[in-house]
Length: 205
Image (cartoon, rainbow, N blue to C red; front, side, top):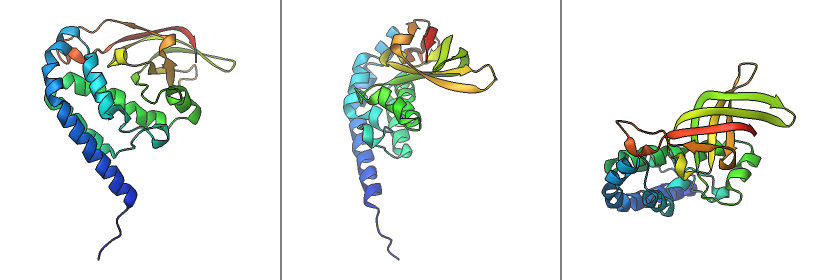
């Protein structure tokens, strides 16, 4: 029995294959820059810009915000391809890119804050509940230090974990204007991921 083909599924599959081809074309560049990533202890800007132009950071982003909404399996294939050339670039860029999926599940107002002015806005994270949270009128006062925020130097927002006074966990979406990045990443492995600390001091969220 022949089943009808889903045009939308075909479109997504084709876009996934096309992006994977673009990623493969970048591998020589990423491989050439691997030593630079280790020396600078972060992913080179040239790598990030090349991945941006290839559409990688839009892979899981909603179509309404300029993304591709690709199948996660295609995204994982791209990740594995990037890792063949530079593990640090694969680690950091993959973590950053996957946040589009989480933000897509948030209230549309949060999506507007992140992508409303620039669909290429990138978000880093550190989910450990290190934040001090104080409920106030209209939101929270938020402070803390979070380690291992891979790729944070190339992002303008961060997803950070915190515990409310009642013991419940929350993830807070914080703009770069409310935090600073401290250069703390001196590691034996994955040296080029730029997994530095993020510090927030009494920000309103």
